[in-house]
Length: 412
Ligand code: PMP
Image (cartoon, rainbow, N blue to C red; front, side, top):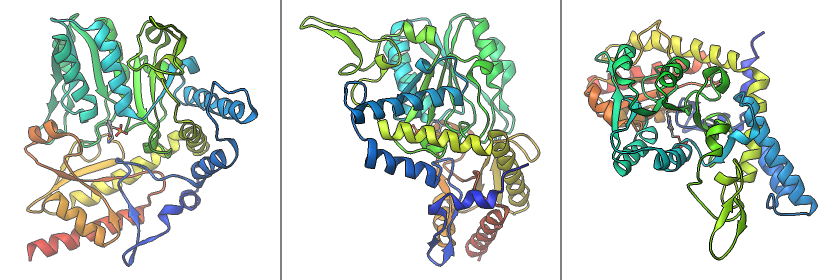
């Protein structure tokens, strides 16, 4: 039985408001998701009852906070089927998670002549850190090309045969593109990278909370995601790392909480995950992220994925019937994640977003932190509608009606 999606909407207080004279239609989930009252309540409960610093305290509140924080770590491990909670490092989000690997792993392993492989469709957060790591180490950065004038062909899997050489030490790629909606075959990428001895890093910012995700089935080495895109709070995210790799890794940040012993001469590190969590961690948000996992699993991630697919297919069908709209990414009928980006002939994406906002429809317009991809497609920006579990077919009608109004305005 699919969940009753109208009940789901009732869990999200923010959705029940007007923007101007219109009920809000929130279609900017690719940027951040809204939060159910269960997650909001968890933050209130923590600050009203348990707030205390973790790990170092022996009083009741500190022990409660520590138990809840470590409980959240276990919950996150279960959410992605990690073998061990010690493989979950809490970070600020995807960007910080990727930077941790780019600084610590890359610093220790990359040398001149090595290759870091990534793809032409990466978010800046999974691109700039590798540029920096390559520059610092003398390694070369290479890209798996995107196929099709509108990026409709996905990544060139045949090119992987020539690109994945034994010189490749690390292969970093996104699970789902935040601009194209492309879904990458991540398990296949990991298998092929492993065959040449390359370490794999998956940017799961757009997939976490939308599809079931199993790090052991995918067999990746590292995986990064943000809590705020999966009904959790901002400021919290996860770096998953295979335990054997984390154990050999030096920390990229040092300070309190991550040391065993400190003398005036030096210090020794705790094992993972504490070694990578210097300073007071983001306790409240980590706990609330655990609650977000419970929330999503109570609905079922397969069902959320099916709901996303139903909405995005409907949107694709309706948007492709509108004149002057160039949809990028997979074509109608091809698999795509729950978002659609398009260029509007003769109208800048910022104007589309501003006009849609007057109808209460929240969209995103710009380069979506994908500047090189935009250049490759010959665009400066697109408008993006991104769906999640609380969106409805009626909201897609509101989107289409607003776009038709915009078209009329600019035509006339
Ligand atoms: N990668 C992808 C694919 C994203 O969509 C985003 C967020 N837009 C990020 C990385 C960065 O996430 P955050 O800003 O939460 O660190």
